[in-house]
Length: 139
Image (cartoon, rainbow, N blue to C red):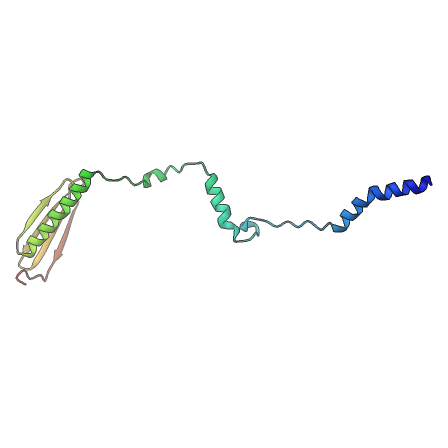
């Protein structure tokens, strides 16, 4: 009877272990990263997580920051544009003219249907000349 009790206790103690082995399967490694054979749909998720954790600042990125121009700068740009448009309108009427700003000098001359636009950069001294022929100011 001692042997029977000992065998029963051994059977009860080992039965959870034996049943676990019956349901165990082989472990298979599946990579998450698409670079190492994982699902390609994980790429965006992994990249977004990496960028969210990135605390380093790009030193070149500061140059790309847009600064809102002041009201005075916007007014100056608007006025320069208006004056340049007026100058071109006057040339269409047969007149010549010149516009001088802080950045450039624009000289427009109409010689018998040949329009010459001379643009001078005041900071570097570089000059650009645009010649348009075939214009008829009387039409």
